Every structure is written in C-alpha cells, then in structure tokens.
Length: 520
Image (cartoon, rainbow, N blue to C red; front, side, top):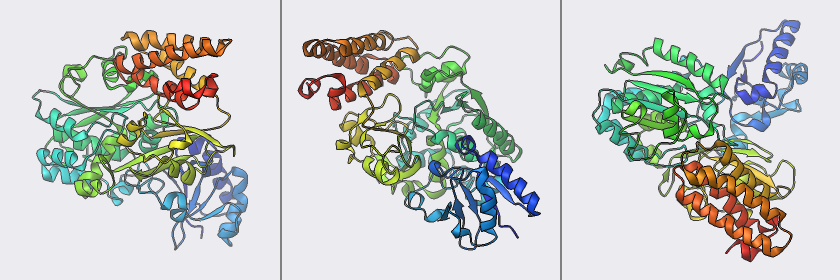
C-alpha cells in the first residue's frame, strides 16, 4: 500500500514545478495501478528544496527534493523499496537543521496542514485563541495583547496593545479592522505564505481584534500580484462564515464581525496605512497627515485598527498560550518571534522564524549558506527596497529593532536580500531614489522632488571627471538624504535615505570616492 504523500500548493512551489510533479504522480500511479493519496498542503518555506514532497512513515515525514516530474518514476520505485536510497532523499523533514533549529510560532502549521481544511486547523490548535478571548472579554483580551509586548510587524514596530486600547476606548457607532496585506517589499513573502497556507490564522486574529475593540467589519487589503492568496482567503472566509466564526454571532460570543477581501491596484505607497485607507475608500492612495491617527479617525473617518498580516496572525497564539509565553521569546523590547525571509543571491533561500536576538550572520551564513554564486558576501539589504545595506562587518548585530536602529538600519518586515561582491552599490543607491520617484504619491516636496533630484545628483557624481567633482556631489547627496529622512511626510521618502546613505558610507569606492570623504 502506498503511504500518504504531501506536496505544497504554495505559489513558489508551483512556480518551480509542483503541479507538474503532482500530474506525474497521478499518471505514474494510474499506470502502476497504485492507490495514490496525495495531500496538497502549505509550504514549509524551505524554498531551495521546492518542490518538496513529504511521505508518511512510522518515524515521521521524510522528504524528497527538489523534485521534477522526471524524478517521479524513480521516486515511486524507491517508495516501494528503500526510500533512503533515492538521490533526492532528505531524511526526516523535522530533523533538517534548517528547520529543526527554528522557533516556529506563527508558522507552526506550515507544511503540515491543508490550507482550506478547517478540521486540520482546529486539530492543530486553531480557534483556541478566539475561544479564550470570548471567555476573557474585551478588556482582558486587550490587556493580554498589551502585556505580550507584541509590536507591529509591518516595519514601524509600534506596540500593538496601545492601538487596541485606543480603538477600544474610542466611542463610535462603527469601527473597522484593516489588515495591511500589501506586501510590496522586495525579498518578502511571509504574508503571502501565511495567507496562502494558513488563512484561518489571519481570520481568527482579525475576529479576536474585532470583538475586542468593538468593530463589526474588517477588510483584508491584498496586493493584486497575489491572486492565489486572494482566492484562498475568499474561500476561507466562506468556510469560516459557514462554521460560525464570522457573521452575526462570532464563535457564540453574541458579537458580530465579518470580513471582506479587497485587492489593491499595485501602488507601493498603499503599503503606508493612511494611503491604504484612501485606496479602500475608492480614492487615489495618497498619504494623510497625522494627526488624526487612524485609531481615532481612520477608514471613512471612523476608528480603525490597522495592522500587518503577521501582527494580526500573532494574536491567536498570545490568547491561547498567554502573554507570558509570548514574552519568553526575544530580547529587550523586541519580544516574540519574527519570520525572517532570505532572498537574493543566497544558497538556501526561504523562511526562518526565530526569536529576536539571533545575529544577521547566523541568518545569512548558518541558515542561508552564504551566496548562491559562491562569491564573497558584500552586503545584505534588510527591510525591503528602502532598507539599509549592511556590510559583513556589522553582521554580528542582533536582529532587534533597537540594535538595528543604533547602526542606522531597520528590520522592517523582516526581508533580507543578500548580495555578493559583484554588486555595484552606486547603481543600487540610484535605483532606490528612482524607485521612490516612481512610487511617490506626490503629496510632500522632499519625496516628490528630492527623489528626482537625487537621481540627477548620482548621475552627476558618477560622471564627474575628477575627485573634486565627485566629492562636491557626494556632499549634496548626503544633504539630500537628510532632507528626505527628516522632511518627508511618510516612511517612503524618509526611508529612501537608508539605502543611499548606507551605500555611500560603507562602499565609497563604488561611487569613486575616498573612504574619509564618504564618512564625513
């Protein structure tokens, strides 16, 4: 009898051939008259091994990967003989060093459950947090979120509990919960992984938020580039609604809360919470001046709790296990775990969920295995396309919000894009300014004008015929970075200074500058 097989439905797995592997398995099983039990699950996030096929054994699931359709005949032969003899055999998946050393709280079900199976979700602790929130009541639930030390995972790292208490205390006939799933940063994919692979976790977190702060309606704002996530979420909402976890009486609480999915049109600026709210209202996404803050006057001018996917998805565990359980992970004021995402020129790209405090070197070298090209590491850009370029000399910095701020960098959404020594940092600095110019909403002058002038300054710097000309342009560029960082209305303009200033400081030779001049 054939054992049960598991193959991910994740977008990345499908992009590298998971559907072809599934088809080949079905075809070969029919030819051999074998009863095929193939379950389509979420992804473990070990992307260099995708498509990763897992097989049930008495000891646990063993893995094979990365598979192609051409490998299927030999794989089936091995499964009927000695599986470990297959050249793509990986052994017990849970014992793989990359996975075994992680601390998976948010992604505890990754690769294990079927995304749209309510039974699978409940069998692995699903909706225990909602039940506890209903039992505790709104005040104690908000206190638990505050006491956990949870901070916004979208990049700003603002304490979530303060937002919850503010929205809960504000009187209004209607309140909203908004999930910012406009994951537009390069090298990030944790939101997509969770929405595609564990959608009920996000739904549960938003339902807890809704009944806690007194909101009866929520929106999940998903970027248009994530069609599979949109389809999965919409189906999951129907399933949750039918089971009584959404609607007029959420989980028997006597309170109403429902959710809708809205799709963005592809503007990076709509990842900023107030521009996102304008977009939800049917307007062009333009950043709003604050105050008033969204917690007081947000969507349609009413109190709105806005959080990132990972923030809301952290809430069910906090309620189910308790605030202290969550606080036991992390360091300093950075508590809990963070799903770091390894991408770029990296040998072992994928998702690594660990408590705050491991170093960037551990992440890039121990988990990532260094560069895919085999060339020396030059830098890692942490926090998206507007994150700072961190050189290897600073790789021993702990992954902690305050520690990174101290070196002029930021963690952002946890994306880490790795580069080898062939990357030209002057061109990357120019790209950051050009990106800002193209994605700016245009509301404030530093971002609208400064980004365009910045591109021109770098072009002049690189074209300057002598050292004096380059030095003069470098001074202008640094002044411009200060203007962007401290004068912009939102983080798009403010953060554009990070990749430019860090490239200028740590890699002056790429600009044709002397080190002493670049660091002045």
